[in-house]
Image 1 (tube, rainbow, N blue to C red):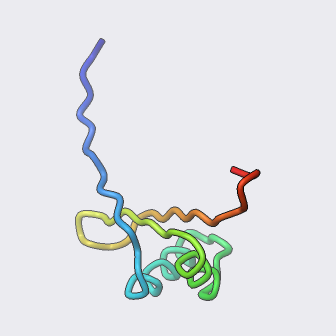
Image 2: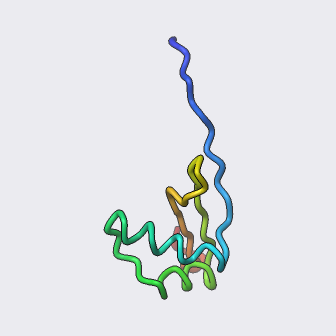
Length: 71
């Protein structure tokens, strides 16, 4: 099997200070999130992100609780 030259990406928790960057990313890539969506993700669930080498937010992920019977 050939080796790979993979670089690990650091996933970090996002906070209030990251919400503007998340919205800019959303607009840049034509996602449908609006500013209040990011607040809901942050206040009711967990919000994560990956930064690029220049420090810009490159990716996000969010989880929201849906009860015990839904995953």
